[in-house]
Amino acid sequence: MYQRYKDRAAFYVVYIGEAHASDAWQLPSNVRDKVVYASPTSLDERTDLAGICVTRLGIKVPSIVDGFDDATEKAYSGWPDRLYLVDREGRIAYKSKPGPFGFKPEELESALKGLL
Image (cartoon, rainbow, N blue to C red; front, side, top):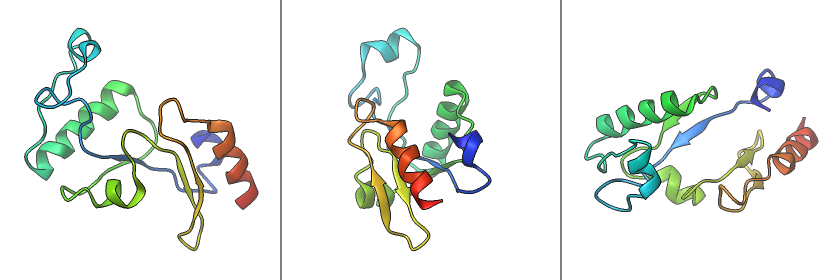
């Protein structure tokens, strides 16, 4: 979707707080996949961890990091994952159910086509 519409819409992945930190809620799959990181204690650490995530997951969409105050996550209820479409006036035109199970890219694309 990003490749099809990137010339007509801005796309961003927003990295919020680490969901499966080793000192919080570590999943066995993270240990198996050697994705074991403690909760960042500074914005620099969060930014470094976001970079690792983007690289390991092969994310091609421009990525930004939520501030250490978690303002974006709080404003958009982004945990664990969400898909949003925000119109030119800053209004939410589409909000997915929590992901990854609530992700319906076809719904997001339909809403995007409606705006374009």
